[in-house]
Image (cartoon, rainbow, N blue to C red):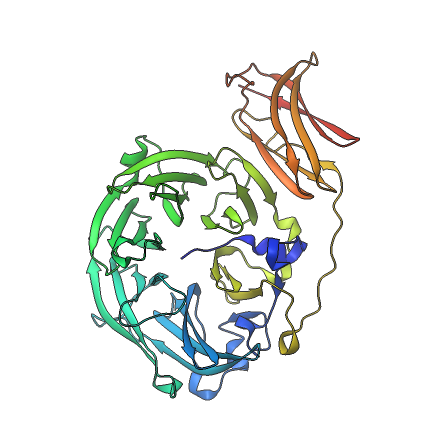
Length: 468
């Protein structure tokens, strides 16, 4: 479930590589006349055959099928409170999408082959198009402590005949509550090499499954980290390394940390590094997302605050705070997912909670939406936060144009203590964390220090207080 957190760019209109910018759109590019789809709004669009309201959506995935000269895409939406997996089949032809079919799996949740509280979904596939003969759909059935394997029965000429099929499930134990799933395609061409990772946030465990759903290993993440800190591991994302191992980034809700673990080719798991985000804002779910086009991102949902992180977790490269968002569009952020050509943002449960759909490029034709005006960048060094501080502090800054940027720390005598940034950077907002250490990595004494931001002919200085 490679999920991306660049949703903040929708509101501040920062360019995004080859895709241009992100734009609010009608749901999944369809002619559903709303940007938020929730239990109040969906009745306004759907026919009487689909009168049940969407009740607390928490995750989404999509699968694609080739149909002659057109493309059929099925959106699978996890509805936690309604204990259902809803599907919406769309047909794309000539750049426009139309709804082909609607349906759902799940009823009371009391039968063995039904959900009580599904929490996440992942597609186990090694190619662009879903093949029911060899691919699978996995759902975390949270309250039933199990991983469910499903399949999608696709009928090209009869969308109303489509159905989700329950195949099997793997029960772990009564202390297991899966929160998030991540399917990793190693790119070897052999599906048996691929792995499905499931995070158990109550038991703080990582379960590893094969492509076909066989349980391979269970790791107690607290033992892997080897400390006594109370941790609640939740969101997970991954990056395949050149040596064939996998770097797993896992969000620690208990401390608002992002932790990196390396899963090796021989099936061992080792702790690599972590970065703390919780000193800065109200602790909330720390959801992490990686995409090879955009990098590694993390979310602290109640701000909301979004961070771009260095892949080695050495620093925060950029922070986008709730002040940059159009708050009327957002309830508290819960999860953000990436689909092949769009993103979906999920909100925490309220009467109006739901999901928002965003496109990578300017919508056109039926989906045309007024493009938001770009906001010019300025040269600015913000006050560090927290201040005073005794461990880590974050320094936010902004540069109006691309160029060479330096950030240095000086003591009250004007002596240079630490260089935090010394590189070419793009225009826009950036962030860096200082841990109160000097250039040699040693802790320094309490006192007054100064941050100096320089770029081109521009310079700005802020005073900070370190208390040990």
